[in-house]
Image 1 (cartoon, one colour):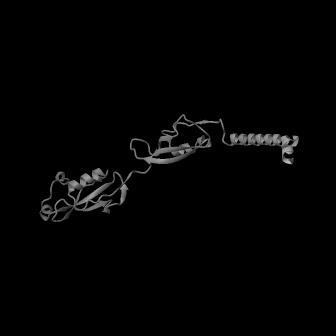
Image 2 (image 1 turned 30 degrees about the horizontal axis):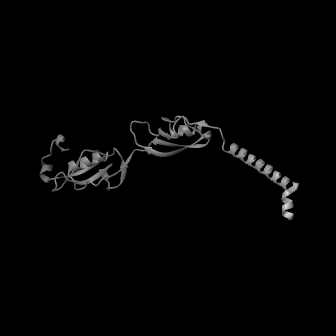
Image 3 (image 1 turned 90 degrees about the horizontal axis):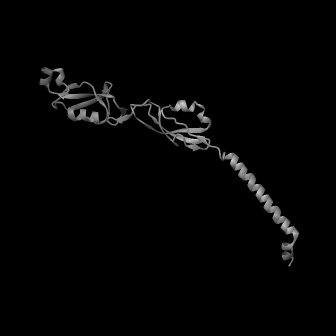
Length: 195
């Protein structure tokens, strides 16, 4: 019976009213704090970074509002090295302050390819394979061999290069080809050396 009397008393209703008021005040303070902390209603417009370099961007005042991260680099000989070609979010997008902006840039270093194995291929096969890999052929060298125009060695900057070694695309490779003794005695004209 005492419980029912207490639930009907003014003291109980005062405590309920006080609890509701305290809850509303605490909720209001938390919401206000979250609004300030998350910069609710404040937006920054993402600038167009295309054509600029990463260093130009991070040395500008843009770093006050955004965080820039390079996520990818591609090779494109027609564009300046290190320049930004794509970004996410797109220019003009409205975002919160300190938003991460992901960048795709043109690679500064040349594209790398694995040196193919050209040993025992014919000169024509080896030259075609070098072209496929984006490598260039230097004037041929010859070595005495019973296998005419077969590749006996592959050289990069004057020394043997093993297959699988990473080198820059566009590098020049020297092919050492087999040549029979009779061909050494009767040298071919310069224009026939690359056949």
